[in-house]
Length: 75
Image (cartoon, rainbow, N blue to C red; front, side, top):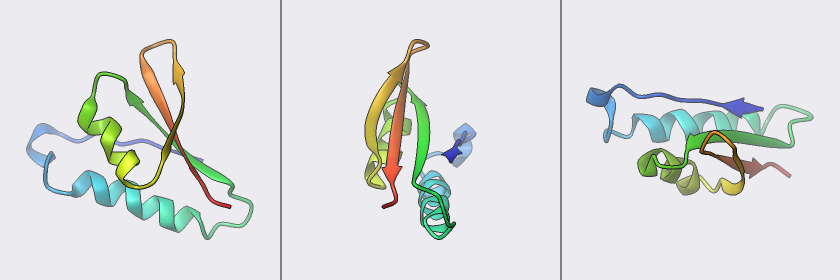
């Protein structure tokens, strides 16, 4: 499964992104057959890249469009 997120500037830095990423990761871990959750972020967007990393996602690849793929293995 893949999750995505975008925050408007006034919402940034308030923990909303952390909740948006952490919640689905925990919830998806309970769905039978789900083996991993992925998130794709812009390579130059440091705050966006760090958000999944703080939730134990691992960098697992990159995209030609300058994006980074993060994966959370579920078992």
